[in-house]
Length: 457
Ligand code: S3P
Image 1 (cartoon, rainbow, N blue to C red):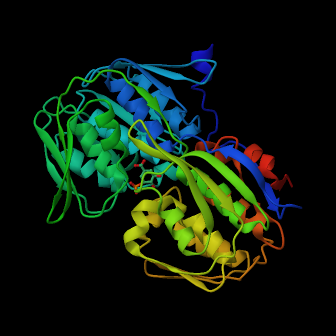
Image 2: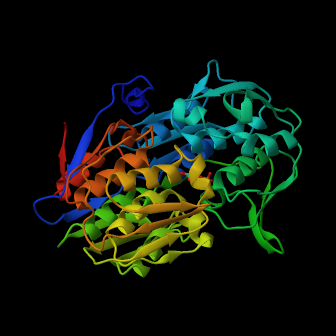
């Protein structure tokens, strides 16, 4: 059945690892691709579709495991979610406050965004739900969302530090709060705003540093009253609770975080020219493009346009000699998922690249700060972590490579070190390529289509 086919998620903790290695291709990377749909926007489209009355149609949804977990969770709470043979997704929602108690544990796999945002959604529904996931997700801190959601009236039973598995006892009498984010996190902001949807009055989040605003943009696209006002301690993002929202058409742009892998690969493989179509260019996501441009990258943006409230364009990338720079801490929220692949670019650049303010990298799908340092050293590149700052000493050309990297259930470690293999003198292997399915299904085929060379040991 088409509806079921779109929702199957099969990879588990115990699945057999899929080792893979990449080596420098025999020629340049060339061609045109479309990056997979934006993961952040895909999660939000399914959730808002499930909270809207009537039909929401989603074009370009990311069909990666993380997003399919969210689709399955929305389905478990009563939304009708289906996919047609052309790849269009349809959600028939239950209305704000209309979700039903899920009959079983919501297994969120590797999906941190799906988990934290859904915890916000169910916090203000008067039922009990249970969340769990893979070993990586079960190790990630959830207290950052459970703390403010408790202030709104929800209760949580979890492992130490709010870690999963966790039970959420949603409140029947939610209270609106004003909450100042202690960490720059769009997930925390979004969890509170989504909880605020079924809360009377206005729920407000103060964000001292701007983070991705896909929740705000999509809520507006669905007709919700969301305001953003500058204040002395940061932007005040506020939502008016208990609106009635109706289904919409959503076009999901290509994910700039996924595009970053072919972008860096094209910059590093000599003579390459690659075009990546329909990439989301929300300025709160494009820190990686700004940074690579500062490093001397030849990246041209063509055909800028707006789709479903989000800026989109095509990127034309040509191989370039990069130089080391200093990346300020203030840029971290706009490229938080891209430091791994940026470090690969920095390893090939001339001179030192210093990246500041990376504390949040420690609580991603793995401790990415440690992973970068360890992985680069294994590939013969000098890297130092000093507090929250990372320094990479560029090789001014292809690094030695020749290592095998542990991916630790982290899709971005897997893809970053495969890109390293494309640029290095000796092949680089990863112990498990299967986590790539969480965010970039088809990565291997797409990159091979451009000329990349992968080997299964
Ligand atoms: C996301 C926010 C970021 C990012 C994650 C997706 C989102 O996490 O790392 O991949 O969709 O809101 P934080 O908000 O925890 O920084």
